[in-house]
Picture 1 (spheres, helix red, strand yellow):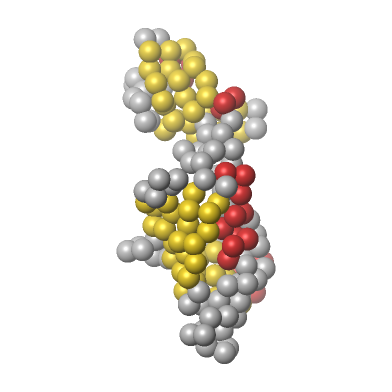
Picture 2: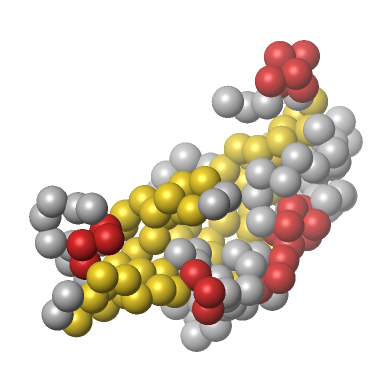
Amino acid sequence: MSPDTPADAMDIADRRIATVHFTLRDEQGQAITSTHGHAPLVYMHGTGSIMPGLEQALAGKSPGDAFSVTIAPEAGFGPRHELLVQTLPRGKLGASAAPAVGAKLTAQTAKGPLEVVVTAIDGDTVTVDGNHPLAGRTVQAQVEVVDVRLATPEEQQFGLG
């Protein structure tokens, strides 16, 4: 607990609701996303609803705590899987309009739907990538803990919805 934390404040622990602000940066220090200027992230700790490396770093923190953490791909957005990059005939996409580079499409896979991004178009072929845009990359998170509270009975049973 930091010296500025009230004595009745609680630490982040499993099944508690934490409210945090964060800024996520890439390997070069460029901001990727931030909650600053927006609503903070509110999540139930220990449920796997945020990246594992961030959740692990938040365990035991209290309101008022601020820190930085480096998150490796395996504890962040996962490793990059080259099998998720495929070049397909344009006709296989089933889209009535021609796709554009950067367009997001939903592919049907044996494991269910997968969002893919068009990364290249070459004549009658389209290359799509099903990896998360940050897969395989180390990220840095600057985090500020705003609040920690007990989950309500409804939140315990149904989650944050």
